[in-house]
Length: 227
Image (cartoon, rainbow, N blue to C red; front, side, top):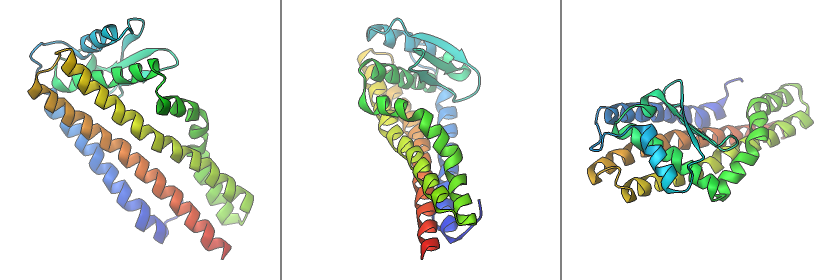
């Protein structure tokens, strides 16, 4: 990838925002990881309670390595929690566990954006990896077919990032409601969990903005070449 004026105008600001988002989520998670919940239940226990109370006792809750690697796998019906979440009794741990449980509930309800995101995954993976390189190759060598294919492929990847936003926001909304309804967190603790999940949402917003900016850049470069 070469650096041009569009890169400086469109991409650099979104990359800076991404760095801020990563800092924000890590610092917020760390802050509320130091605050123990009143009920002293772990993230894994909180997820198990919420899954059971929503008719999802068949969902496994497993530990996965790494930090902030928590995710729900709809294909295998497994909820995977990282070490700082699985066995810890902090506000951060319980909040993140509830968020992932929210995804499991979305899966049960066939939540539209989640279904669409799951459908897009294979093509989006190809598009995000190959799209920009095909487009740049088309620009450098003057091959319009490669340029157009690259933009189309990457466009699908951008759609994936955009669809991810309502999926993640809805999962966090469900998480906070579940934690309150099941009396897992107190009102004060809920505010802490909300801050953790809001910070996490910034990373998805940053990813979407970077993807959109990158697509716009490719389109503008293509238009410049055709003039």
